[in-house]
Amino acid sequence: MGSEPEPGCALRPFAVEQGLLSRPDGSAAFVQGDTSVLAGVYGPAEVRSSRESPERAALDVLLRPKVGLPGVLERSREQMVRRACEAALLGELHPRSSVTLVLQVVSDAGSLLSCCLNAACLALLDAGLPLRSLFCGVTCALAPDGAVALDPSARQEKEARAVLTFAFESTEKRLLLSTTRGACSAKELHQCLALAQRATDTIFQFYRDSARRKFSKS
Amino acid sequence: MAASGLSAEVDVGQVVLPGDVLLLPAAPNADGERLRLGPSSAPRGRLLCGPGLRRCAAGLLVTKCGLLRHRPPAGAGTGGGAYWVDSQQKRYVPVKGDPIIGIVTAKAGDIFKVDVGGSEQASLSYLAFEGATKRNRPNVQVGDLVYGQFIVANKDMEPEMVCIDSSGRANGMGIIGHEGLLFKVSLGLIRKLLAPNCEIIQELGQLYPFEIVLGMNGRIWDPREVISTPQDWIHQQSGLLHLFVALSPNLGTGAFL
Image (cartoon, rainbow over all chains, first blue to last red; front, side, top):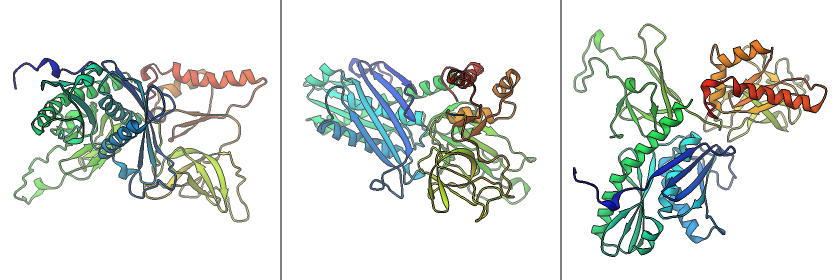
């Protein structure tokens, strides 16, 4: 489509820093507007025999909120991030080992789950774990009047009728994860899905540019 | 855009990301329908798919982020050479034949358990030292450093290492002493140091004579003798590390690739 993108469909500016933590095998800090998440990956490392799988690496995700102890919401987000990572990670190359991904919320100003997904992908890349493809997360907010805003801020999320988060993989832009808070019609879901899919081009191009910058320094 | 296949030849030296599919250079007479007989349709020979790449239906699938490298075939036109991805990594994954520095963590009957920095501890038989027999056991204690190579290292089995080569000689391998300092660096730095004509090693060697042991698992051992006061020792050890950093202008900030 050659028309101008709607004003609500612009993504906030991104920033990423990889390899900033010295202890984890891979780390990345991803900033989307004012939302910032720090991710650290340890792996492939030793695994407890109860978690051991003879076919693939055991992936654990831990999400730590900025304040307080992790609760039910964090647990549910952990499972969502874990499922997206498992689809992309080539766990079959490291059976009987564990990969642990720790996400720390540094600031939450909307679109937290997609920021976590992006930070997770870049941390896995930084750790050198084998991946089938890259993945990214995009959040959409559906306002009461039906307008769609991509990468909503905290205020937009609060006022929205529904907040949808999608995760896509990079090779064929297939959907890895879809989660909705609130109510929306099927038509609106498809509309948000289409907009989010188009936005992933920007995010994957950003991954590519940051990888180029990282390797051009050495 | 990124989903379309990219020609492998075009991309050598470029940054590739997981999910990129590299199309192999097509044979001159690639024709899916008919099989032509004759010298022109001879198969290209074997193409080595190195670390960071996997075969897939369309060609080579990139699985790690890094720079794509290519080594042309050694013989006269036989085979397609090798492609691999140069990536940055801190965690080591055992590979058969790699020389590594391990730390002995346990003695269990006839084998030693050695920590090599991977997901599993490697096993080292007491007979895998030069001149070791059942009566003449090597004097290996828990906490010793050993330099050896992997004879079994795949994803399905526990890694096994030995401190002798195929003809039974130590060839520099074995217990490498109790004193000295062990550094942990990234795997890429080790590969750079082990490359032929490494500038860092040559420049360091011109400054003062030294002897270090490099393990492919990211460990460097410097067998400096302890000198008079602890401060001197610390200064000398950290001096070597700072020299590594200072003499590597091409490595960039903090990126021990």
